Image 1 (tube, rainbow, N blue to C red):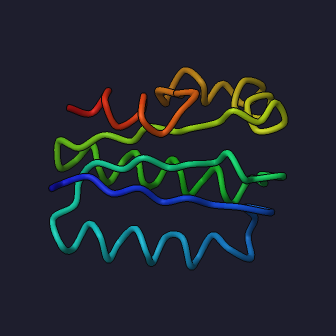
Image 2 (cartoon, helix red, strand yellow):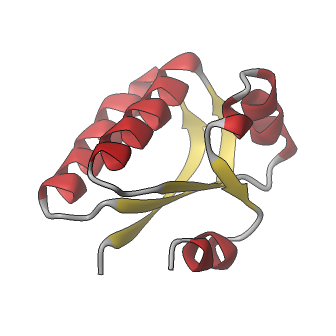
Image 3 (cartoon, rainbow, N blue to C red):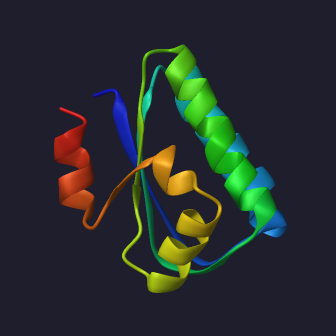
Length: 103
């Protein structure tokens, strides 16, 4: 359909942000407008990665799409809370819950 799941692992940092953004743009170009971003395997998030998530949120919103984050790691959840991005994104504890919320 119009939803895709992207599962990330390890460090989500400036080194991976360009690749992440290119991948997302390819999905957007194919008409995919809803994204579930699984951050469960992510150990560290930097500002470049957060900017990518915000970019994706803006891009999907402009096409009436939505982004759901799966963040069951306390480290990632803390970063989202400290940066107040937990107020910008809907954060789910499971991929299944995130996918259900997009229906």
